Image 1 (cartoon, helix red, strand yellow):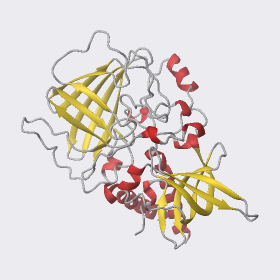
Image 2 (cartoon, rainbow over the protein chains, first blue to last red; image 1 turned 30 degrees about the vertical axis):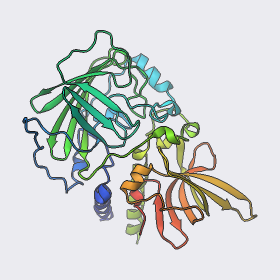
Image 3 (cartoon, rainbow over the protein chains, first blue to last red; image 1 turned 90 degrees about the horizontal axis):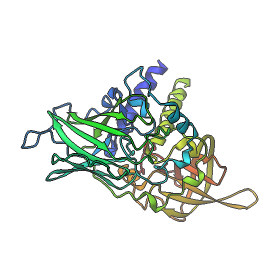
Image 4 (cartoon, one colour; image 1 turned 45 degrees about the horizontal axis):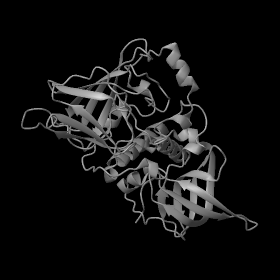
Length: 258
Length: 134
């Protein structure tokens, strides 16, 4: 009885949190997003809206859609991340204070900051604009070009995109090896290649299925899935992390705790 | 009665669990949930800045010694989305703050709830504690 009451109150509380003042969903959900979806009753499970050209309309303010605390949360049930021993060693040696995100550096791909983001389009280009950590953007070429032969390694890499039916596919190479995939410190090398597949499953849900291929850190390519949730009344705000970051000097211990 | 208590405890557990999700850093690497602090004092400064809003409180002990505490909130963006304004907490406000102290033992804490002298609960370290009761 107590448990029942507790869960009812918890559900109500969670719903209130999610709905009150248009707060974003508190959890960046892995594949099994039902727990969050069930607490957002005001987002209709109607089909995704479409643009005049017939493509799904991905505009809107989104929250989540990538790992925050732990990349492994996006794995299918029962699977493990195929870390190479060298990568596992790097992960175990990492300290929380060195997490680039704690130091106001970019998330890279596919990590997501717990802040909203949105797509913006221009002819032949697609941009992802991030409110939080850091107040930055990704540029995706949609004009059919190929990746350069030897791209300059960067935090967000070199991205080219195309549509496969109702799914936006973003292929990215040319990453630096500086960002972490999550608070736990899952590493990668400059050989990282990501393929993100964004599908607006319904009005309120954007599914991001990400294949991570990095023979320098993982034994085989693997796929994680995270859902972004729509903030129907959301607006992007300014977030300049470098303004007053006092945290790093107080952060202690190894990476691995969210 | 016992049932109510456990419900509250579970709810509180959820609130604590939610806290890290707003931060750009690992919550547990910086703050110790096993070091709860309750502070009574006067607000001396408010920093409405990213990545976290902060306020500073002078706390006087029984002998009259004053210690200044640095208290971390969520980011202004998260606070605004939950109904706050930059004037919700002001210099000179007498407050009671509860939160978790920094693991390094410094006079720094993540503020979870702030109660004004008139009993109004106006502040929280995470959205889960609600916005200003105005």
